[in-house]
Image (cartoon, one colour):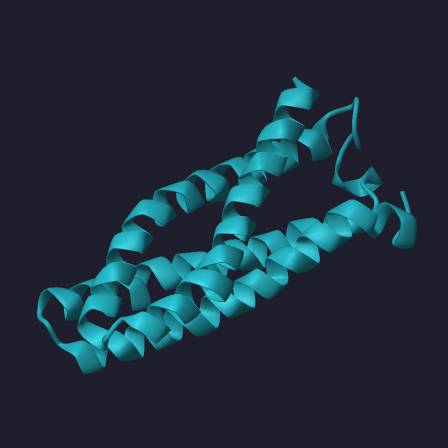
Length: 157
């Protein structure tokens, strides 16, 4: 069961952080380069509608599998015995989830309403907020991956 939890944990992180990496560093610059604001904003609504269900899955699976491993006697045996790098991953991961929840329920909701109303300036403003928050979450996600892969060596096993 522990191997399944670890596998789901890693796959969830790859999907979420990898998706942000692709969207921020490849799709966004290409969309700005080739699309005017109305089709660009419409594209982003369609992209987020397809990507956000995967992020929701990650938002559920990452803490569930993370806590399974923390509480498992075969792994860490509880939070009090978990090493520092696990606490760092837990804290930064929680912050990432809070940022995502804000993105989904605030600027993404505004973006969807603006595109539906063809209010392109409001849509651009909402997309700008999403871009900044995704950039923040991407940095946090890369930090978590760094801590997950090397933390036991730097922060102690």
